[in-house]
Image (cartoon, rainbow, N blue to C red; front, top):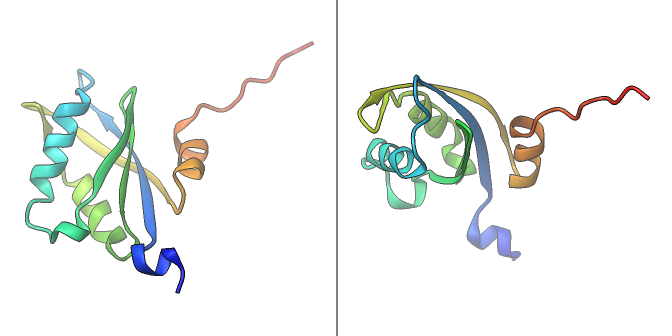
Length: 110
C-alpha cells in the first residue's frame, strides 16, 4: 500500500473571480467555507492559492465535479457580487499553476 492509497489523490481546480473590486483572500476563503459547510469534512475544498483575481482550490479526486459546481455557484464574496469562472483541473499544484494561472512567456524580438 502506498502513501497515496492512504491519503487519497487530490485535484487542483483553477478559477478566476470577476468583480468590480478584487476580493481579499480572507473574504474568498470565508465564502468558499460557507458554500461547502454542508459537505462532509473530508470532501470540503480548500483554497490553496489566491493571486490577482485567480486562485486554486484543492479537493479529493472523488469530489471534483461537486467542487467545480460549488465554486461556480459562489455569487457573492465579502458583500459584493462576483462571477466565478473555472479555468481547468489538474492532479498537481505545479501543473495547475503553469497551465492555468501563469501568463504566457513573451517572445523577445532580437
